Image 1: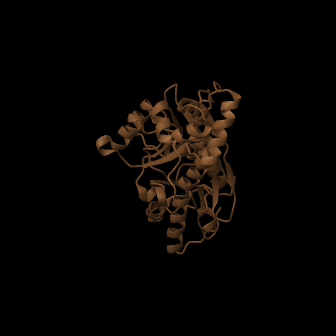
Image 2: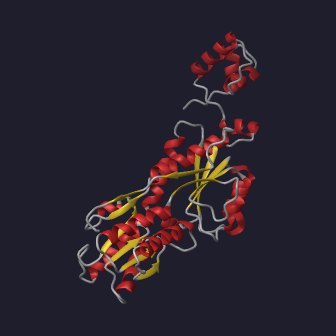
Length: 331
């Protein structure tokens, strides 16, 4: 393989100075039409590719953004929510000059990840699945422009957020169970260190209160299938519910496994509703009734808002995307 052409070789081929080539590469208009044409022809002839690192040093920009996920890798790679978010982000970045750096850590011992961001490793960051105990994400938000996927732990006036109305969505799911005649309704929440979990629990409580009902049971999971199965088992050991609202599809699938192990029929004995409308919802038996949140659009919108900020524009500070109830056979 031949060596990559240098900017000096382009300058010689075009019969211009190195600085003229640099101005053309960086989009400057301070170049004569003849010089512009000569440089462009030389670039094409030599298949010259600008050195991104050198340009970054000159502009103090990295042309990279970080996706910060304060979770362990097992949960990140096991939850289809994150795959959809990443797909949306990469879709939005496809037409830009920005690359995506993925930073996954449930904590940041030694501040390695935080230091990487604060020392200029990226131009901005997207943060999803954050917990109120994740102090290091606040330090990242203090260092670079950030867009949050979901309400930040301590929202400040300058924060940019892309989210869904989790309270209204959970209320809608619970109301569906009420409308189908269920009266002993339980919920499996996400971690109560996450604001989305608390918002979904609030919506669950609100729908029951409006109907004059009280929760049959509440149990906390961590958005994984195993935690949903364990929570459902504990519920079945007490006053058996006739419906379960699980705050994620994975936890709902775990609940279905527990119900099946007890010989219970879904939805005849116990109805189940999930949250996400991921591919998991179509893989269960029976197919899962669930709240659809636009996960791809969330990732895409987060990236678009950050790109707009990095370009010097002022996008909306808060974007709330729509949800809908998808009724299948589990409820």
